[in-house]
Amino acid sequence: MTTHPNRRTILSGIAAGAVCTIANPALLRADTLGEKINIACCGIGGRGADVIRGLHATGLVNVVALCDTHLGSPQTAAILNMFPNARTFRDFRKMFDQMEKEFVAVSIGTPDFSHFPIAMRSMAAGKHIYCEKPMGHSFHQIQLMMNAEKTYKVSAQMGNQGHSGQGYFQFETWVKAGIIKDVTKITAFMNSPRRWHGKAFGDYLPEQPIPEGLDFDTWLATAVPHPYNQAYMVGEWRSWYDFGNGALGDWGAHIFDNAHQFLKLGLPTVVESTYMNGFSPVIYPQNATLKFSFPKRGKLPPLELTWYEGQQNFPPLPDNFGTSVVDPNIPPPTSGVIETKKLAPGKVIYGDGLIFKGGSHASELEIIGGERQKDVMAHLPEVPMSPSDHFLNFVRACKGEEKCRSSFAVAGPLCQAMALGIIAQRLNTKVVFDPVKKKIVNNDMADALLRGTPPRKEWEQYYKL
Image 1 (cartoon, rainbow, N blue to C red):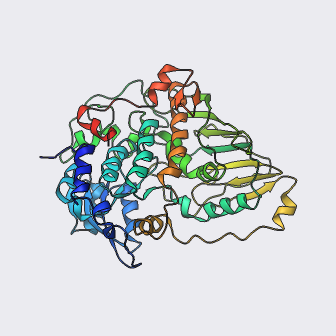
Image 2: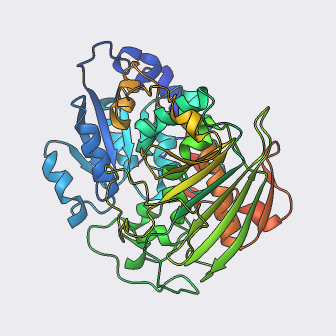
Image 3: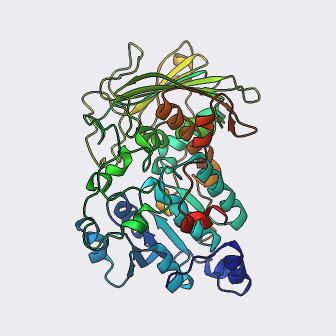
């Protein structure tokens, strides 16, 4: 029988030496560069499979456990074949019950809504975690995950892999050198096809028979319960408000993550849905525009970030924008295509005397205008090379050799800003947010969405760890 620990039982296990973070730090903090760590992997198809391959490619991990609610499905076959000696599970809780002492890190490549309980159980047990973006499904979940990272003193990396690429180091260098300064406006856009484009649903879907081998009850985790329907599965979950975080949650963390960190954006005070086409109460819209207003931060001026999504909702661009900036290392999307002949995902940044254009992930910025352009282009500083990709950065952090570049302390406020955008989008309204009280002050329904839907009773414990 699967046990369902609360915070007291987990902490008592730590005190007894059952959890290695405190009882035996040497198990987690290897001093030898070549020493491998044992990792358990949750979600082994789709993007989860890519994460596992990326971690394995470091040469510094032993994959000892594989967990997927539809173990044996076609999507899981490649990873199962790749690691035939790993123990297999359909329920991460049983994995922890049976072999918690045998791994020190966990990868989470499951749907957006199920990141939270796996991450909380892992961190409370002292495990380091690599968690795909966005961190959690609701503002409140993200806050609890940030708190847990700090409380349990683990290394936690969000999987926006561009945060370890050259675009990251360029942005940091250019901010320090005063090239990027006094930014007041960012235009960010994702106009490629998404799974829900061309679909119209006014309600959730009727029940269908659950496929053999799928543990659908565990798949639902802390999400709003719905009867099984295949249109929720294998990436389709991203289309639905109750399961996914849409285009913004999927791509915002790849497009404006560096700006968010190095311009110290924090949380917006206003997010407004300024345009929408194809509104639905259950799935994300066909086209939408959101305007985020970030207040003054010390000497940094207020900043307006406008987000454009949808195949017919192109942003206004400078006349000399030219062709899109595309990082050749971007992994293929789970559906649709990145149409580079049109407008690939990216951004335009308007700073003091300079205009920059950029793409997503690790792509570097290009200076395309402004009265300072000639002077700055003649004296560009050298940008350091990345010492490790995102996976190696995480593994080295587990071993005490580096710090996670996209730790939850860094990624959490970015994800919370996007969560506020999704609330404005879901209600097609304007939300006014108090970043001190962490409340939406102009709309009670929007404020309630900060916490998300209350979980089923057996999943409440993960909010208390």
